Length: 351
Figure (tube, rainbow, N blue to C red):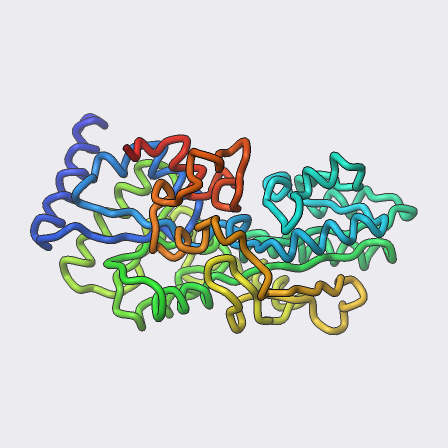
């Protein structure tokens, strides 16, 4: 069968499944990379009237709050060098972004790998590494700490705002959102495995672990709509070439060696018990103490919180496309290329 015919067959099966169910489905893609792939490939228009895609809280930049940015800027003013992933630069803090602070002279540098930083840093540079991300990137920070220990470095610390995916998903599914199915994050699943998402079955909502290519997503939608049709709540794995049942056991051991669970603040979801990771007490000398005033967080006009909890589509935010664009982002969902507002802006065809 030709590729075109094969794709058409899969699309027709998905639509036929939904027609048998008898209503438009609400499906949440947890990971920002899935959001981008869905919009880049036009699936939101291909399945218009069949599937209402909702963006979830799986973009690490999007769920990072202003208080963390403010802390990094204050540390930069104390003459530390801040190393950060580039997509965090434009996230608005309370008064400015890291990019704006850098323009005013703060020592803020982009990193591509924290491991590279600690392997090459001078012992004369007082450095703080901005550690954000979900389980996908946590092993890299764990390996970085191991390198710090091997080199005996005393001048490198970590500002940890690391997140776990299970707790916010539990909060979202329990208290915030009603959906028919979930597309689970393939990146995180490479670390946690299928077993790491078995908790979703407790909510009686069908789910599927998906890769990120267009064919991955189509096959995942075919599997997911069949599960919805059959009321099958078993977590399905359509990313078998990468995701194993038990996950990456070496990476998980690294995480367990260096980190403990802690409460964490998510933009849009608030403070979540057990939603983050902090360095274990024996490594606390390498951790920066951060101070947050949660009450003062969030630009009241920015609706990132409602977008991340499925209450609002990006184009329904009064700032969208008017004063909030990828060049002038007001919220993290527009900053990151994996953010739903950014994806809508570039690929949405929302009108």
